[in-house]
Image (cartoon, rainbow, N blue to C red; front, top):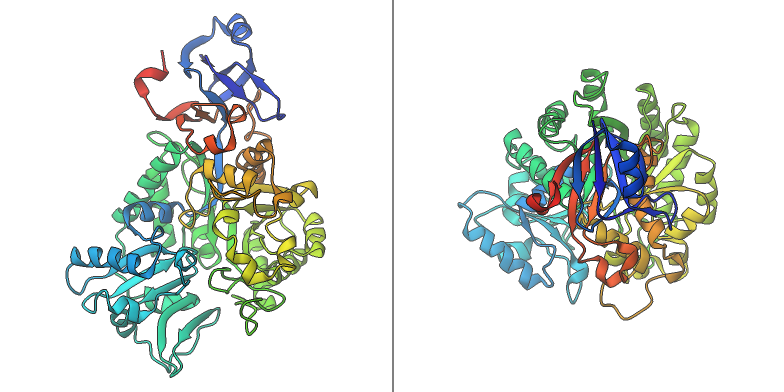
Length: 536
């Protein structure tokens, strides 16, 4: 029997102006959209369930095209220092945590951001030693491409001036060669192996917390990379199967499989995960780091530190071999590439080994561009995973990193769309807030709320329709599902994000306060802000 959603507006996202009144669904599929009167006349004898959306606005289900779902849950459950605006505030947050932690146990925090500090000073082991010498301390930088640890943690890990930089990583050092405690990319692993082994019950709790928060934010799905950080990756897949079981919890989940986990995962799951709401989408490869720590791999030196071009995680030969490995499993790749040199080498690798027929590779971030790289991307079946909120968190300091001339071709979301490239929108949570409203606002306004300027690189502002499409149609393209998801139309999956107001009727500053009324996955209500008031 059929369901009718009525008493609100429906933004189908087929066209910017396409709005209607009602949607009829059956067995998880949209039958038709139109006026409430017409839908009741046509399907009245089949309608057995009615959903009153109380004047809200329905959109195609929002999907976060790039995040770390377990990491997002961990951040919700762990000390978050991302709002600290100085070293002193950071230290006080850590002291409070240390006072509540038994002596000798780890104090762990997420998200320090030195760009918020008045002097942009990066904390080091001495700063953390002022917090505690009785606890090993580890704080993750907001980009998750670096950590800072104190002396007790350095001692536990056995690091010294004789410890060499690992391949794909860098140990910051004092003039005498001793580690400062600031570790980039692969160097983080030198300390992380000392952390307590996480119980899978803790991972399951983090994932459950994450999914509930994503549903409350209006997301019906997410593309996530988590399978290399919590011990046995097969057990991590099983946590996803248990949490997103397709009965108690429905959430369209595409798992990116880290290349070092690929063999065990694909050999164990030749037919994919058990619930139909989870799939393996691509092999994840990192080619470089992040701009914040100057480890994004550039073709020219950093403007504010000319002695470095960043960090290449792999040589060109190694990267090409990893793409070849993915092809042996008939899989596309999803490649983290922030710097333009990282992007160039990524394109060289995927041009040497094109994706399987009907599949698309994904380039994640693609922030630093050159015109010739855009032309090469246009010739390849790629989708670009963009993080619109980076235009808020990275500006204005990123201009210092790249220089006024080079920045002109970077963060160029509008150019990419106008060039015909497929673009999806994600948060990179827990790196950035998961809120789709913040991502949409950033894509359109390119500035922080309340800022009194026209936006960073205002010629790259997207329209509201383009911005929402990143999280709907674009996200569907990223997993080859644009024929079934990303629009509200007949024969598409009944996945809906229902907001309390129509964004098109509001000013941009009001978007950030719009709440989710309901999140529907497979015609099943997975989140309601007020369960008693929304259905008859």
